[in-house]
Amino acid sequence: MENALRYADEHQDRFTRELEELLRIPSISTDPEYADDVQQAANWLAAHLRSIGLSGVEVCETDGHPIVYGEDLRAGEEAPTVLVYGHYDVQPPDPLELWDSPPFEPTRRNGEGSEEAIYARGACDDKGQMFMHVKAAESYLAEERDLPVNLKFLVEGEEERGSVHLAPFIEEHRDRLDADVVLISDTGMFAEGVPSITYGLRGLTYVEVTLTGPGRDLHSGLFGGAVENPANALAHLIANLHDEDHRVTVEGFYDDVRPLTDEERRTFRGLPFDEADWREEISLKQAKTEEGYGVLEAVGARPTLDVNGLTSGYQGEGAKTVLPAKASAKISCRLVPDQTPGDIADKLERHFAANVPETMHLEFERLHGGQPALIDTDSPAMQAAADAMEGVYGRRPFFTREGGTIPVVADFQNLLGLDTVLMGFGLESDAIHSPNEHFGLGRFREGVESIIRFHERYAERQ
Ligand code: BES
Ligand code: MN
Ligand code: MN
Image 1 (cartoon, protein in one colour):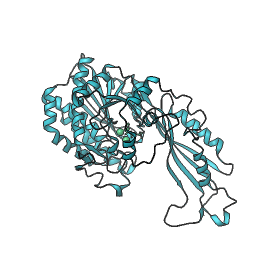
Image 2: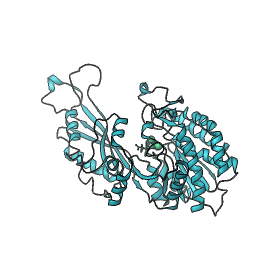
Image 3: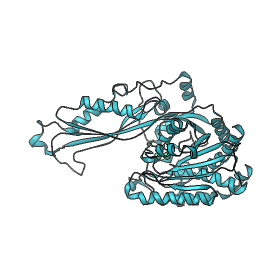
Image 4: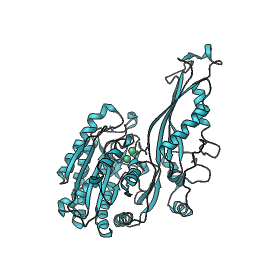
């Protein structure tokens, strides 16, 4: 391991220059215009996996964007097998005018904490974090000629659109994907220098609701007062989705929510969270949580309902007197165990159908979803990850639950019976999905080192 660590240290500069090559490819999975770029990113990654000496490298076509696979099984039957998952697709970069450097021209500059960082879409989520695993493997293969564990890479190109073709792929290739544990770096760490391992992720259900009134936009003077306005009506429906305690009013919404245990609440309270710093980082006047829950609990362990986009009527400059024909809202719910995306979408649909004004027609469309996940923190793999991070940061990581969603984590649990270790290195200030996404070079280095240490520690512990 020492040789691999030294190799990683010596080659850090080349590693990050290679990452920049991948970051130049605009692999935006949600926009069909970029399909060629997504394919190109997959090809680039496959070529790279071959170049570091992995075998069985393949760009596997799906009904959507391809999945890249590669492995090294030379550690043999005695050694455990680690399945590394990541995604090479990225979110759209808009609004473009808010970027200080173009999103697909990776640029190095000093971020808030004066740490040098790479600015580019995908720098943190997830090209940068995924690539740390590739470089950790390379460090072993180049320096020691073998790995302490068997390693399999599964890197997909559709995470940002809900991993729609991944579950069937996993089912079809269960033998090839057989492993002892899944290792993912696609989450956050508590703070700079404060490592954490994520043991819970929220799920997601995403829908679009459209109310249609008249058959066309109308003059609001000629018709206003006699025609019910879909924008007014949708606003009313949305306003009633929460009560005064900020709880969701959809019938049965909380039925399957697993309550927080006293121990979990103690753990949440024990985290070194500074609400004032958190507010300042997002320029927020005041936090607003469901009655009875703190910020970390609300984000990590309670379900939500949020409007993500709202469209109706005239959106241009100046005034236009119009009574819009339709109004629509993109709405997503973050879910916690044991809620499921399908059931919550059913409940939402029933809620809207029961409350739509008689004057209007309702359309309810399901976009995508993902199951929530909770992972046992006592497993050998979790403890190996904690040891590995302690080796790098000089302190034991905290175990946290995070509010984001990685749909495949529950799929690995349900389809393959595999636990996942979420060893993340992102910071909230990295601005994933936002303009000026970046990833600190220091954290890239710490990530590679943590992964190198994980493999050795896990091989010993298993
Ligand atoms: N890597 C994120 C999820 C994440 C980020 C989890 C930080 C925990 C901490 C992932 O790429 C993502 O953005 N997921 C989407 C879900 C998907 C179905 C579109 C999300 O959470 O919105
Ligand atoms: Mn991600
Ligand atoms: Mn993402």
